[in-house]
Length: 292
Length: 292
Image 1 (tube, one colour):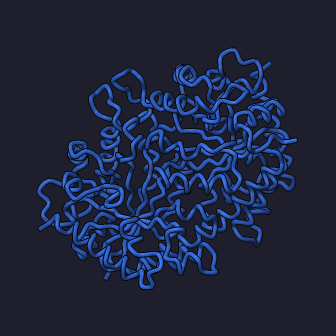
Image 2 (image 1 turned 90 degrees about the vertical axis):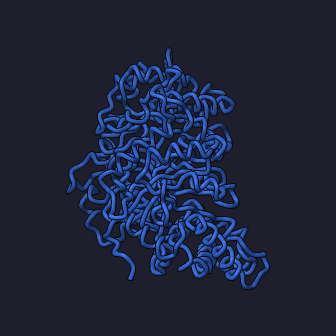
Image 3 (image 1 turned 60 degrees about the vertical axis):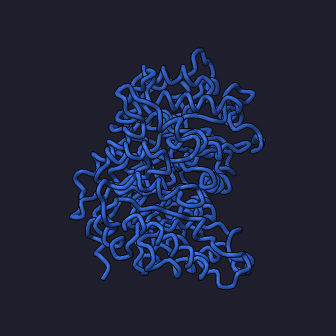
């Protein structure tokens, strides 16, 4: 029986990680040009193509990984029909027992943030990514019972250092300052698993940086994007684990791979879903090996 | 004749400010509960209510102010039909000669930012608000010919100080560090008006902070939210003007008021558009008085 949507998000995430035995999350960043030829060239709308491709991918990954992360931008670029497709797919993923993260990186103040939270959660997402640049009070409207947030702390794009690695007068980097806000926001929202509904996005970066962020955020789930195609490795993930964690849920990470899994086929391959299935199996097993 | 959408955004904004003689911008943050009773209680869909209310508001403000700012969250909370309504209204506002800002505060890396830029500009927005926490390379995908961006630098919500006022080791605040990135990004995108396509969001804050940000961003248009209902005043705006500016376009500000204009009626008032018309006239005149 799936955990109730009213229970703590971190507990639900821990349960599905325990059930699948791996902290692997598939990132659904669908781009029509990369779809199997039979879908990309079919005589249907772009929104229908998104749905057909994503449903095939959900077929391949359900039961293998604990969660799926939808990249909102890939749907928004197709306008209202794309947004409608996203809503349908979130419901579909949830009904298959996958926890659903909506990667939309919203950030605004007060009532506006409330509108964004409503938009995300009314469509069935279990958690969202948010930006904290506007301060902790811009994150609070997203803290709803049973739902999770992942606040942007550290990203791995080339330009991120120009902001996130800047050193404050008190010795912390900007990312570490954001980490402290995340830890404080999450302190009263810790589940029986020992982890909080308030998590952090921590991209692939230097191991020393990762360790420093883990020390500041011991109770946070880290959403770690960019495994595989974007260069993240197992060694890098290891530096982000909670010290002493022996089981996947206790590790406190949720690692996403996107392109290396969802496009694991030749464009003219008929049984492309099987290709995605093999790739997600390998990805899940690789991360499972962190907890021998 | 309206300026070509291919010309520099800052030049187009300067032209419409010169034409209307005021740097006033109306913020469209529509919330159905606040609509005139005849619309709120009508037997139509939420999306149709949004469209009817916003079209009435556009009737009242077109020709009086240079620009309108749509709050994306207020449409997204109504799902795909809300997003479709937003697209229709952006086109409608543009056809009335208003410059259209889409306040969606997106921020992501590389190809994902490209998708967001496509989503915003394909629907006809002239400019968008973006978050710069992920670094300057996350803003670059939004820099399209003829389009503008306003990067979040300083906001006025209570929690903003906890991030934006933090002092770096080099003496700058986090907001000032972001301001330097904005100035650098905008340097090669300056129009014949002397201002750049890359602007900044600078909310109502202490006058000294505002002056410091202006000194760092002499070529930026400042998008200044929160005039009126949120406590912004004329004195506060004065501190943000470019030194020595004698005419509205040279001032380098675009000041938005939302609630105090768009809800300037009694809920059972039949001619509510006239009420909005009086409020926008007063708002436009008040800001015009900065340039006597």
